[in-house]
Length: 154
Image (cartoon, rainbow, N blue to C red; front, side):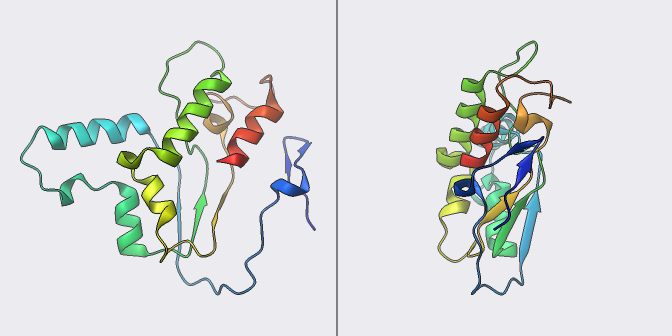
C-alpha cells in the first residue's frame, strides 16, 4: 500500500485513495479553481433575466451530461474562501466552503457527486494553495494537518 505524503506530512492509511479494480476508465474529467462566488453571481444574473432553466445549469451539470465521466480529478483550488480575511483563511471558513460544495444543490457539485451513472471511479485529486488556506500559501501555514484533513474529507 502506498501512503500519500502532503508537504512532508504522511496521511494515514485510512485516508489513502481506494482502488477500483473493476473499472476500465474511458471518460475522465478534470477541473480546478471552483468559485462559489462566481457560480452565485452567474445564477443570480440568470434569475434576473429571461433565461431558461437550461441557461441556469452549472458547470457540474454540463460535465455530467456532456462528458459523463467515470472519474473526476481535482487539479487544485477546489475552493476559494469567500470571506475576505487578512492572512490565513480560518479553518471554520474552509470547512464551510467544503460543506457548501458537498451539500448546496444550487452549486451543482452535490448533484454531480450523487448521479448513479457517473463517477464509478471516484473523485481524486491534488490540492493547491487555496485548498490549503490562502493565495500562494503552503508550508508556512499553521494547522497543516487539520487543513489536509479538511481537504481529504472533501
